[in-house]
Each structure stands twice: as C-alpha cells, then as structure tokens.
Image 1 (cartoon, rainbow, N blue to C red):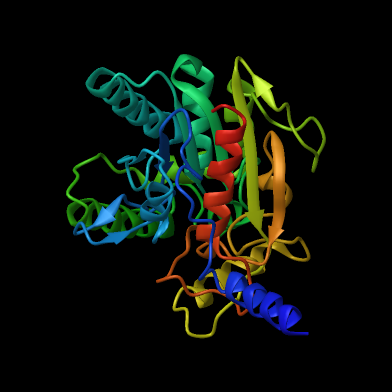
Image 2: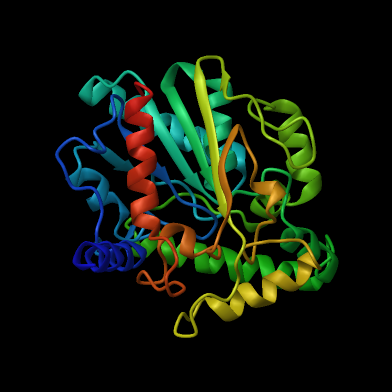
Length: 308
C-alpha cells in the first residue's frame, strides 16, 4: 500500500513537470540542438525571458549543446531560412560542428524545412512543433478580413511590422521585418507553393505521416489540440479567437492538427495550445497536462538514442 501511494505521488509530480530524468547525459545528443522561434518570436527578450521558456536550460542540464536562433520576427520562410543558414555556417566555422538538430516552433517549422531542403549537409534532424505545414486557417481568414491592397491590410501590416521591430530591439537584433511576406508564407496558397519547392517529409495523404528520412535528414513533428488551457494565461483569449477560424477542426488556436504533420508524427494531440507548445506564458498550462519541458527533454533523448 505504501509503495502504491509513493507511485501515485510520483505520477502527480511528473504531471506537473516537477520531476524529469536528471541523470547525466540524458539529453546529450551527438549534434547540437538549435531552437528556432515562430512568428513574432525572439531568442530572448532583454536577455532574461526566453521564447522557449525554461527549455534551453533544462536541455543543457542533461548534457545537450543548445543554441537559440535569431531570425526575423516576421518575414518569409525563405528569408528566415537563409538567416538561419548563415548562423549555422558561423557556428560550424567557430566550433567545428558538423550538423545540427533543428527544432522549430510554428513558423520555425517551415524555416527549418527550408534549411534541410537546400543545405542538408548542415542538418541531422528537424523537428517541427505546432507548425502550419499546409497553412493556417487564421492566416487564410486574415486574408479575407483584410484583402490584399486594402486599407485594412496596410494598417494590420503596419502594426505587425512595428511590433516586430520592437521585439527585435528588445532582443538585441536588427533583422528585416515584412508582415505581408510572413502572411503569404503561412496561408494555404503560400504553403502549397513552398511545399512544391521543398516537399521533404511532407505527408502524401491529408493527415498522414511523411518520410522519416530524406537526404540523410530525420524528420519529426508534434503538436497540440487544445485552445483555452489556463484561465490565468493572458494568451488564451487570443488563441480562442484564432480557433474560431477552424470550425470543427482540432487545432491549437493557430494551427490545425493535420497541418502540423511532418515526417514521423510523434504526437499531434497534446493537450496544449499554441503557446503551451513552447512553455509560454511563464509555463502556465492546463492542470495535469504534460510538461513541455519534459517532452523536449524526452525528444532530445530520442535524438541521442538515434545517434543524432
């Protein structure tokens, strides 16, 4: 009976993400891990608040070498991908790394796909988290609400560009911003064009899995299907609004379940919304839901065991 109680207590602690495998080398992958943010993202604000909240430190504590990418907060997948390639080439020249394990959230998914497509020599694996590989219904809806060439589009683009510049300043960067290019990359039409040029890892069926290995690069994906997960999370109202564009389709507030599929689908229905997927905001999420930090740690261990 006493042992049963201890097991139950351990399960509760695990559910809250307070207990994770901590033995040395658990996350020590062969190749460094590079985390790539999504739209309106950043590496770290003022050097104290990470986009991947609490995740880099936990990966490093298990032995992983971790780098945080610095790409435009809002711009096209191609331009962001080129920015990332320059950073990877620099890291390779400075530290002698051969390849990298790229993990991209949201728009970070197409960004890392571009790199794997045009420079597979730099990439050991890519993992997309909550990424709109076939486009986002929210991006499509915004195109209807603010049609191309309209005053509404100009106002919305101006606001997003200004916000992006502010994010860049707070993160100590000066990358170019282009909200309309970002929107064109994330809607259904733009995603279809991108997929025609960079099809690696894309499923052949509407909601299936893609090839696990292409050009020596391993492909993985995961995503969430909850929207409002914590009443104290200030990001939930925005995601509730975003979810209205999806009708009855399962989504995380910004990305549909099937759109998140790429390569080996590890899990596409975590009880997380789009911000929970990177442990935002301040780690708030639903009660008894899996810890994103622990999931990233477990995936790093998966990459390690795969020799990556």
